[in-house]
Length: 162
Ligand code: ROI
Image (cartoon, rainbow, N blue to C red):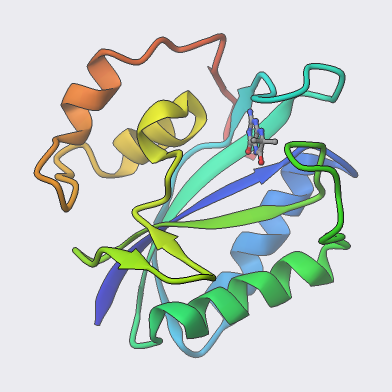
């Protein structure tokens, strides 16, 4: 079994609901053992600023699926949420599910880069991840605590539990 961290983000069509439906769909999947979820966080858009604020969350799961099988699954959930792949790069989206970490694996294939390239620079990933995995160490031996301690909050706000 691999322990996997997923980052969820949405800023269109009732974003908090999109995140919660995605979590419900992950929980219902027979190949996924659901471990934990962070709170939801409101975050300022990274990229073009003329788009709504985002809701972000991070979840921990366990799975026997191979990385690209899990990617097939997360992409199928994105599509069910009306995700359109030709959306503008860094533009608004109904649901994004990123594979942040897959056990200790370092993956670099045309479809998948793990750890996720933005992980250490995005406050909307690092803070929710720290909430559920405060002692996490990345495959390159960096501690998540060190990363968090040098990363500005940039207005990130924990939302009340729904
Ligand atoms: N900005 C925020 N705050 N949250 C996201 O999930 C997010 N996702 C993206 C881009 C467009 C980079 N900006 C984001 O894909």
